[in-house]
Length: 360
Image (cartoon, rainbow, N blue to C red; front, top):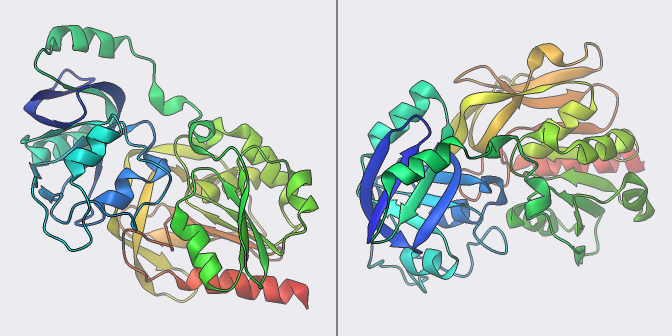
């Protein structure tokens, strides 16, 4: 099956198609992880995006039922250098090709992903279209791409959040997890520490959250521009100081906005499992899993009670916030990983400690 990937600057990559036949328009981004493609495909933070894997061999261990991070894949397209048609792993139940085909996602292989990644690094992420099939009109796709609306500025949270709340029962502290596009491993990590976790839709109001009488509030990851989810920012603003709060990725950005800061779009984002982050309090450097295209502006953070707790050592962007007096903190990266290192899993323990202190 033929396939093309066309960028908004007119660059065309021709290759071999796999997955579903069809076309999708989205923001073209790259991820530097060497493993974890199944978790990446099912991370709701990738909604609206065509994901390029920089590691050249993808699909070697197939797809299994245990490593999904959400109810379905959310990427709009998948781009790889070399795709493995015959995976070898005792957990594998199907190939990446089968999984993408079943879920209507087009993919392309056989292109120079290094050249594509360098173009995105040099010029920034950009809109694109991926198309697969035996009959592809490149010029027609270019024209449609030129007139296509800017997908990066839309509110994607409402497209990925759950519609009904659900609870992972346990005997410990009660946590409300606000689902802005939450990965399953956030709830699993809290549940493994003995917490009862209630996952609620992104549109849940502050009054509804407090009516559940939680011991703590978790703000999840999610896709898109945090400024587009103004309803979530307003809700979080009303919850500040009411209960201990921990924000991850988009949740961190939403908390930053609720505290009076601003956010901005990064040139090509942070997506991968090997980003160095420095904890400014301890001086320690952690290797982290990241997936975001926006960041909190350090200069916009109100001076005084709010401090920057972590920075990215690649570009010095804000990777964490902490309040001096109120029980809240946030990080831009993923302590729950999946995929990625577990260096920062201790942050869940810090959240539990914060809850214990508030309950004394």
